[in-house]
Image (cartoon, rainbow, N blue to C red; front, side, top):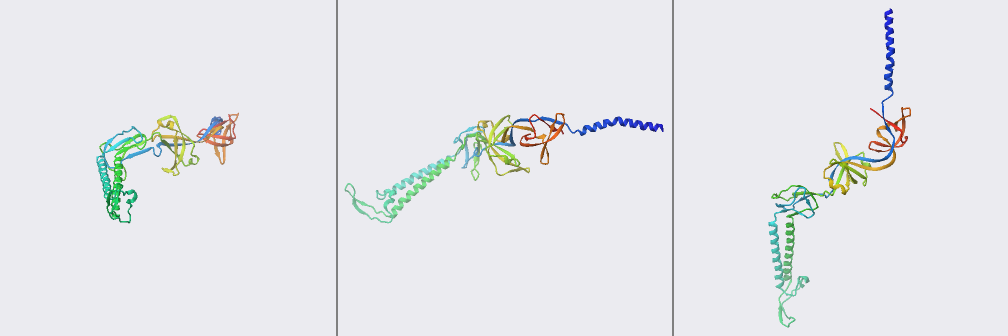
Length: 371
């Protein structure tokens, strides 16, 4: 019996010595997790939207140059990377047949012109096309008269049929003149000129190849004006309502990660782009031309669009703010070192920071709960 009582006593003694340690362990857990301490500061912040996009030529700055006639490419004066000016010759299609056609029509025009002269000289010399030959419904018979020298002359018969003959030969001449103009225009198609100034981006036809012009004109080269570029930024549907034309935008490209390019919002596409069930809107950024020489089409961009700026406002990290219903709560460090809860009112957000409108003072310490 004494042995049993002794064992029970030892158990109570051991339990008493371990119990404070157990209490100490659970007491620390109840004190809550540790906080990262951050001071409330006053500074300038900007409301902004982040987006990704790419550099693209503006409308009209990328032109595919093709041919309007079929034939063999006799000369090609362009290579990738070459600088060309507007109206510079970049290719020529074989044109001997077109030159022969022009020469033939010019000969026809001379023949038609001679035909008009013969038809006029057959009749009374005084008549001319400008007066409609003076004959519409009247038939004139031969008669004798005197010219200014007093000589007797006999005037030939002239009627409506004679007037028609002169009109007909004149009309033939006008038709041949029109055909000549058409032949010259077709001949001009054999010389391919640059429609804009820019850089040759691609060449899809080689010298000596035969091209066939149909509904789709065969492309010779593609020209891009690198001074006329823009950024197409894809903005999420949750942010597009805050984007306005004229807002300032900054962007970077992977090639120059330490350089910021500037621009402004020029247009917002009304139709969304849906990809993998994600809805984005295309926002066009007009690039500052003084910086565009470093950019190339299809470069990937990281874009920041600024909505507004606040100067000298109280700012804390967004991670320090907790929501409880309609209230926003932060943990404030007291002089004792403990943290207590306080309700605050917030304003504009800027990246990972948020503006504090009321509830805090500059220099106070807020806690960010550590996970």
